[in-house]
Length: 194
Image (cartoon, rainbow, N blue to C red; front, side, top):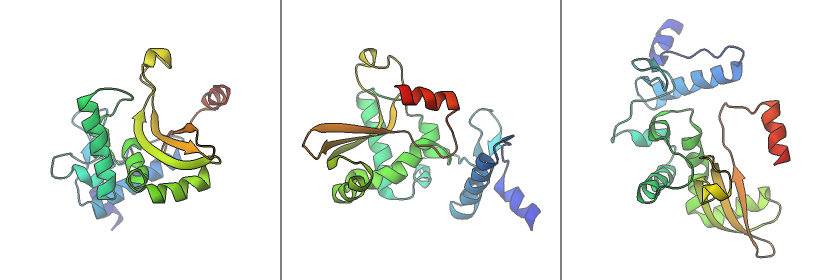
């Protein structure tokens, strides 16, 4: 039974020294196999190779990387806005639609429902942001513009929550979402200083 399941699961990339990431890859391979009923998709770095935590993307199945239609709609809105007016961070469509461990669909899956349901967002955010008053908007892959006046690179918040604080002042809260990536000690120290 184990051998049959592993052949259905597909190739699992090895992550020496990172058992946590390895378990996530196996879990997403199981999800792709047992829930999405998809074959292993292309490896993000090696042409011609396939890996367990991606799917082949087509117009018919690109919604499969999202848990709800509202999450998919949030992702499509971001792509549409980028095509109209390029700005902010970089959205890699192949990762968004087909990589089950990408942070971009993770953002849409969690924050998409809140983007379109402000009463739910207000109830939740008032519990996690100390000075939160009322949601204005939730943005994905957001970077301040013009970038030359700020970071002068393509870095962006995965999610930027624009809101009014309790004194009715405009405020933002930027978040980085990750399944398996971790910041090194030097990165964390840099974050604390900036």
